[in-house]
Length: 101
Image 1: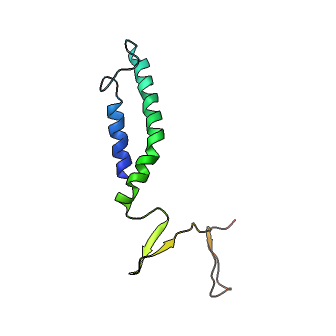
Image 2: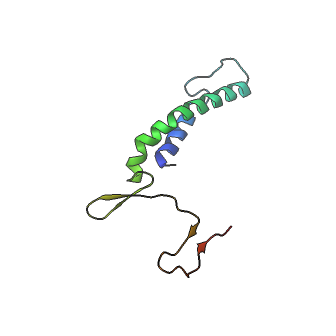
Image 3: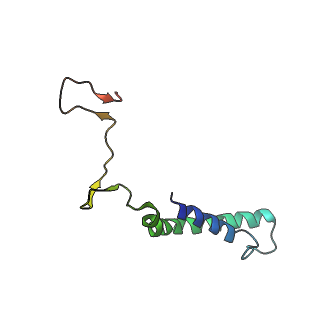
């Protein structure tokens, strides 16, 4: 998670705290009000988190997830998750490095 999403969630939590902007439902017990505001926070955060993430990921990270910029020409290399075992390509008699089944 990047810092912008963390700051966004803290601000959203503060704004949706009961009696900051509004108290829903009015004239209810504090537990009902807290539960209502918790549900509202969860829904708003769920539907807006990805928007904030995409809008701010390039500002703080400097590159997209899974890509690395290399060299002066700015060539992009895709990083692909590798297997858990690494086999030698130079000497077939060498042992396999990594986990074995």
